Image (cartoon, rainbow, N blue to C red; front, side):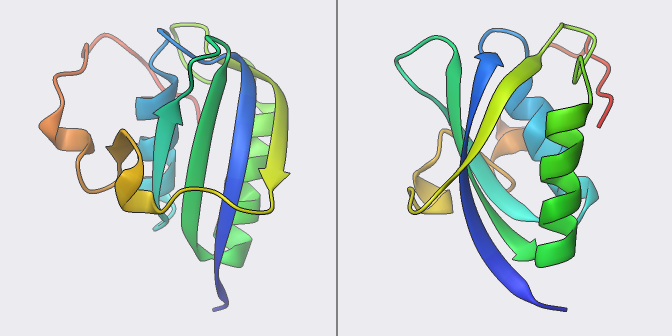
Length: 111
């Protein structure tokens, strides 16, 4: 099992639609550690993923192909893998702090 770190940027309908929670839950489902952060541009979220390379590729493919990603209409128009990014612990929402936040429970996640 090859472990790797991937930094990525998602653009589209990704803020105010439970995108970060959806992505973090999808990471946890696949045994991936990671984090996601809303950028000032209202249609951009950066993320960092660390784990099994095949599981990360599976998730990135699901993010690209599943539209919408949840029942709130989260959709990714472009997903770009970046050369560098922030450490997981510097993200707003991570696989370790996701349950510390007060999320709206009325969202169904499709990935």
